[in-house]
Amino acid sequence: MLQINNQSYNVRVFGNHFVLLENAETNQSNQHIGEAILKADLPFISEVIATEVEICLKLKGTFRKEYLESIAEIESVRNEKSDTYVIPVNFDQSLDWDLVELACSIDKQEYIQNLLKLEFDIAMFGFLPGFIYMNGLPQTMHVPRKSNPEIGVQANSLAIGEKYLGFYSLPSPGGWNVIGKSPIRLMQTDKLPPIMVPASAKFRLKSISNTEYNLLLDQDLNIIEYNGLA
Image (cartoon, rainbow, N blue to C red; front, side):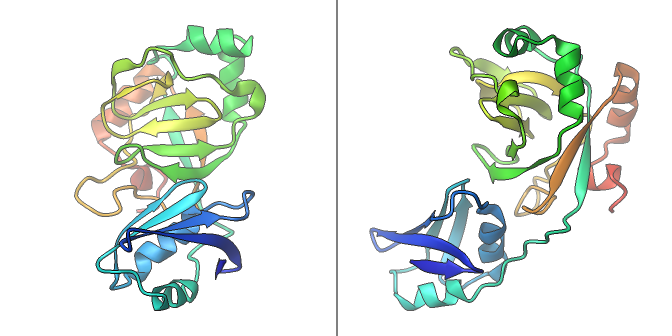
C-alpha cells in the first residue's frame, strides 16, 4: 500500500516498465494526484495516465522500489477552493434529445433546466485528447450510450454517456448522446497537458441562443478567456 497525500493506493508492477496505482478509496478522485505526479516531472516517469480509479505510470527504465518513495513524497496540487468555470452551451445544436427524453421520461426543456442547476467536477480525461468526463449527474438524468455509435461527433460537443457528462474537444466517432455544442474551446493542441483547466476545476453550464453562439464563435475564445481568467 502506497500513501500519496493521505490517499491510499495499491501498487502493481507490469513488465518492470509500468506501475499501476489502484485507488483504495473509491470516494476520492485521482485527478489531482495524477496532475501532481505529472507536474513533479520525476526523471524516471515518461507518461502519466489517470482514470477515475487508477493511475498508470510509464517508466523510462526498469522499475526500482525507491521510485515509490519519490512518488509518496509528492504533495497534491489539489485546491479545495478551485475555480468554477462556466461553459456556454447552445442546446439547439444537438442530435439526441429524443433518446434523452425517452431514457429519463422527461422533456428537453425540463432536462435542461435541471442540468443548469448542477455543478460538475472532473472524473478523468480521455478517451481522446481533450475529452473530459465530468461527475455530477443524478441517477435520474443518466442516459445509456448508444448501441450504434455515430461516425462523427463535432468538436466542442456536450454529451451524456451513462453517469457522465462529456465534452468532445476534437471531432470523433462517439456513442454518447449529444445534447448541445459550445462556441468556446477547452483544449490547446500545442501544449501539454492540452486541457487548459486544472484537475480540481468545477464546471457549470449556461444556456445560450443561436445568436449568442455565433457571436461567441466569431470571438474564438477559450474557456480561460471566456471566464475572464486570462
